[in-house]
Image (cartoon, rainbow, N blue to C red; front, side):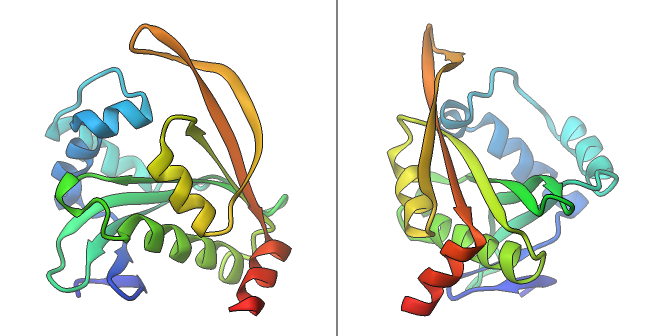
Length: 183
């Protein structure tokens, strides 16, 4: 494993490196990822390299590359955005770039690892996310990690000639530890 920071059963999470520019580009340009993340503009390697240079200047953003343990292949990205250590809250995101690894549980495991990291290492009290209401695969992974549906953002985004709803989902520290105690 190359530079692991968090190690799971099938995957590990590591810091983003400049050579990950192609992965970031794929995460933004891949049609299915574009659809679930509502990405409207293409990107290229040059832009992604610039973006990586600026990543660690952002004090409220903690990104990771998701890698398969068996072969070190980088398959996606996950992050905490808007990390607020006073309110002890953050916004979670995840993108798996390659269709051939979808359905293998990597997204669920990465979500679980990030939730654990958020509560046990960062001492967060709340982790939340927004998800397109039609993203059933993502919603299922979030629920497996303990997120609950908290609300609906009606017609929150315009995409593919229609307005789309988004769910607000969240997990609280006490819910995480109650869930952990049951296992």
